[in-house]
Image (cartoon, rainbow, N blue to C red):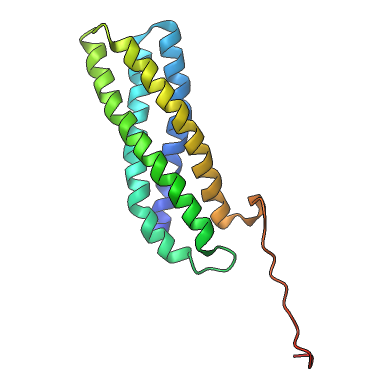
Amino acid sequence: MNDAHLHLMVNHFPIVGVVFGFGILISGIYFRNNGIKNTAYSVFIVAAIAAFLSMYTGEGAEELVEDMPNIGHQIIHEHEEYAEKLALILYAMGLLSIYGFYLNVKTHAKARLLSIIILVIAGVALVFALKTGKSGGEVRHTEIRDTTTVSIPVQSPDGD
C-alpha cells in the first residue's frame, strides 16, 4: 500500500465531515441541544484528524502521480493549495470543538456563542471543502475539468 492509496482512503473524510458536521451543528443550535452540538463537535474533531492524515499522505501521492499523462503540476498544485487552507481551518475547528465540549459540560454562558462561531467557521470550511474536493477529483477525472487538454498527435511533413 503506497501513499496514493492511503491518501485516497482518508481524503474524503474531511470533506464529508464538514458537510455532516455543519448540518448537525445547525440542528443543535436550532434545538438548543448540547448533545447534538457535541455530536457535531465530534464529527469536526474526526474531520480534523482525517485532514492531518490526508495532508500527511498527500505529498507521497503527489510524487506518484504528478508525471502521469494528463495530470501535470498545475492541477496538483491547485488541489494542494485548497487542501492546505482547508486543513488549517479544520485544525482550528477541531480545537474549538474540544473547547466547545468543555463549555457544554460546564454549562458555561459562552457555550452558545462558541457554537455560532464554530458554525460560521464551518461555513467557510464548506467552501474550501468543495473547492478541495473538486480540484482533487480533477487530478484523475479529466471528464470533470473545466478545460480539458486534448493531445493530438502531430505528423511530421514526411509522414512519420
